Image 1 (cartoon, rainbow, N blue to C red):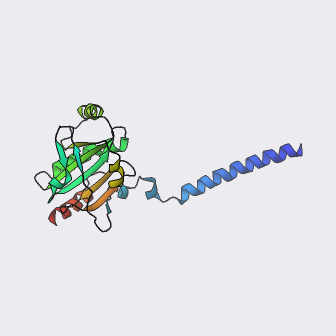
Image 2: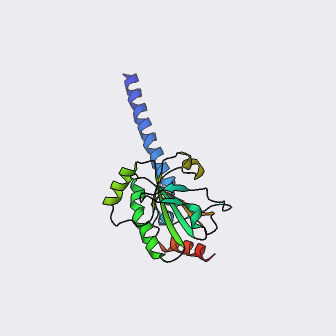
Image 3: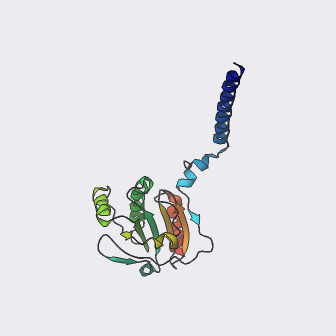
Length: 190
């Protein structure tokens, strides 16, 4: 009888300790770590040393071939995404909004789909509202993951007018936010 009571008491004790640990860990996590912070959604991270952006030469769904080097002298937002990535889809309209806001300036968005069949990407684009008017590129070579240091999606790089990585953003962003637009305008004035 005593062993049953002891076992029950230990199980209850473990359960209490488990829930206390969870409660303490939740309280110890700063609000910005949850990804819900406004600062995270509108922030860009400076790329240390501004290294030269890797080569990017890919076909577009429009049948054209795109070269990042052709945009020398312009600021380019290179966005890596996939149709199955909900955060990627969520930020797509903000990429379109940003492109419209900076229309007529030396700025372009290049959205690089990673590893999906062209037919799937085309079907996605036909159903997407609002219509995306920036180039959608197709990357099927896995080496792009290493050269562009892709560790998650969506991932975006702002390439300055000299072809260098200036900023990056891992995770979804509101690219129409004044903070981000201001950073891009600063790059355009360099």
